[in-house]
Image 1 (tube, rainbow, N blue to C red):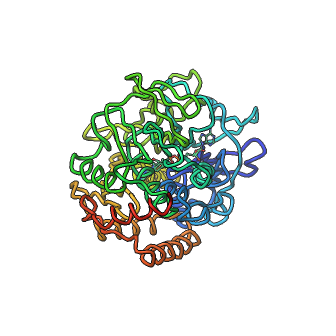
Image 2 (image 1 turned 45 degrees about the horizontal axis):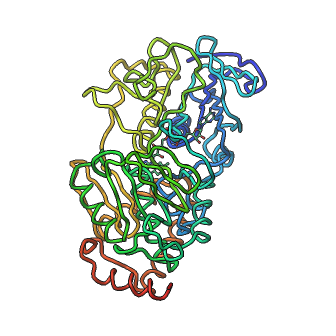
Image 3 (image 1 turned 180 degrees about the horizontal axis):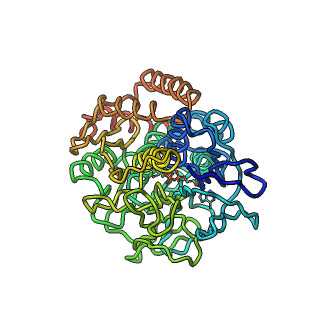
Length: 446
Ligand SMILES: Cc1cc2nc3c(=O)[nH]c(=O)nc-3n(C[C@H](O)[C@H](O)[C@H](O)COP(=O)(O)OP(=O)(O)OC[C@H]3O[C@@H](n4cnc5c(N)ncnc54)[C@H](O)[C@@H]3O)c2cc1C
């Protein structure tokens, strides 16, 4: 076990100092697992300091539901300091702006903090792909603040009927990956709920995707089902579209066409937050993720670990793992086990390496959520929706989150059933009832 007299303000007694930089899915699962491990003998001298530039941790898969006012902030986020009291870590609010891996120090606004073990889990930010964006119409959906901006904008935005020009859209979603498709699907349901319904004839939402199909990382079947779902909600989507620039409400496409949109959701890719390394020579993938070995350690640098979106572990089959919550959570758990066993308790187990297990994943699309099983088996319909709900329920950060999520989901379901807007996803492609209700709503609004 490392025994070290900690220097500086943050560590005052002999401990193994673990600094966790960034507290999202990776940081949370690491700390939670460490807490479980710390009940065992030999772990009492561990001092974990979490440094995050946000006070709250956000359950991102529920952000689209926050953006459409279906859930409250309390159901999808948790205060990090309070979590620290339960999970046994200290919290410092601040942005790490420098890392010196040789001297084992991180810095926050000129203040240096030494460590014995560093766990870096700073996640990712929007990738603007060099596109020039001006004006305040563009919003990304990365945290609870963004979700509230979208929710408010939806209520204030002009309907398509107030802007009868065919090139005007209430909402344009740029990026047909998981975040974009989820956002478009939820937003379409919301427009229906608040009486600004979309229909195939007068689309209020358009989704623009640069590649040849939406959800291009998913199997073809998932893309096809999702396209059907979007169509049934009146969402227009276009593929092979390059956005050149955005100026206020004008979106210039590669073809020279100009679209106008009151609200523009940017969901066109991410880039890893690794800038704080400066010019230190670390091996990075083409996309900028940090290459780590199968123990999630930066090669050649002892006790510097990287997890979550910014990590690209060299795993057995040579596959590059996607940036998602499930990978981040499994990496966090693995790392806690590895550090507890090998480093803190001295049980050096040379064969322990990280392996990602695919337990399936969820694509929440509102009433039409999908569950993609481990062998790419797609479950839609009430079963898909039920599994998606249950996975979110158990994965939430705190019991308070779960209680709120449960109550708010029941409330929303009751409202939907009472207003007769419930639809079975299996009927999404030919939902005559929906179209009827959509047209009725349209007449009412006009
Ligand atoms: C809208 C949306 C929907 C999503 N839906 C899904 C889904 O359904 N399923 C799924 O699996 N994944 C989903 N994801 C992806 C998932 O959120 C990420 O893959 C996951 O959060 C990555 O975890 P992480 O720990 O690497 O980083 P994050 O969870 O992003 O956490 C990183 C944290 O570090 C902080 N930070 C960054 N830089 C610094 C710094 N210099 N100093 C201190 N703190 C810093 C950040 O503010 C952030 O709080 C979604 C993402 C979004 C945006």
